[in-house]
Image (cartoon, rainbow, N blue to C red; front, side, top):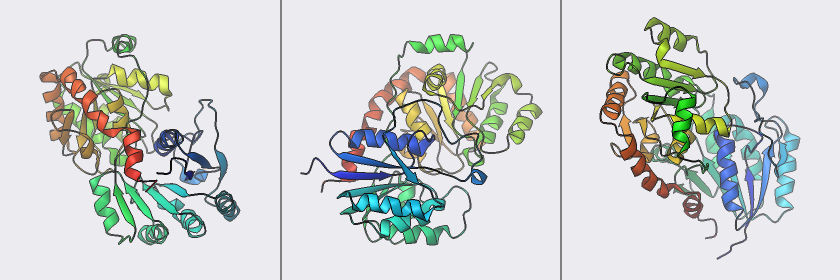
Length: 370
């Protein structure tokens, strides 16, 4: 067994922010324990015209060992990455893939590198929004790979439609490890003035497919049964928020919602997750979710959509609820959770269940040294 592989990781890495960058950092931390890992980061990620958020960069100062080379619109940067890989006696290259915008660059690089194995971590086999020629772009990209990695059963079915000739590895999204003190729960509840109030969290970038409208309508259905329920909506909007505000206004729900549309750092993140009793992710479609991984880190019970891959991570009625992403089913699950006071029981179940989703186990599923 070779315990010291030369691995190159290609994908966003801090100071870029977002789920793919967070995943990449945690994966590289794991791989670096026994291997020599070089991080080929982006110099520029999305052109400003394609990016709907406030900033692509984290404001947290952190040590950064990545090589900021890649620019999806610069052939010169692609060639520089190829030279770096081919001059370094690289064993394995791992591409983090999540959007067809990056497929031409990834195809160009993958075709021209001399390595033993090429992995694509398929965060999204297909984009959440329409993208022209994406099937063609993805097929052209993955034909250069030896391994594809998917993180839920839904994505496995999607990938099989591309008739990939290499090995498809069925893995999972590991749990992010953020240290916290469970005793801070009461302190944070007091600070946010929700100490004895049933509290729901909706967290992450706000996009139409994530079903915030479903949650708002569900709260409207239960507002008389749980008149003191509070919903913390925390995340940067990647869509126009006016429809959501109108829905809240129209149904006289302003007192039920606390909204923070700023990107939150780790300290603030802890405050929101620990002060909540339940996270609701009523996604209309999804792959896997770093948000669900975060909630499991904090032993926070969840209501997740039956559409897509989130259901693979929840034991229904034990660590959370799996429901159709419609207002009736979401409302019913919320009522069930609070009426039966399931927080402690489900938190305890999550503590045990999340051991199945460690970064060490994820590394083993990749079979890098076989």
